[in-house]
Image (cartoon, rainbow, N blue to C red; front, side, top):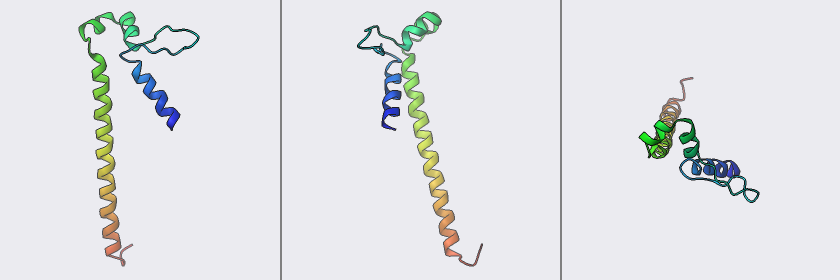
Length: 90
């Protein structure tokens, strides 16, 4: 898990800034922003801060998953408490 998290962190760091993926063999920086400029320059120039949207989507997804898990655990706890209070029911 630690290695996977480190790899994901490096990928997300290469979204706005160049990352030296081939160091120490080559110090050429790779970034998603430079790739976007080559593939779709209109998007890159019309929305210069698009990388903040990627970070916002990640944060919103994390909050959603946290609240969903919390709601499910609360419903499970209520279900278990009702089931334990009525031992005669299956």
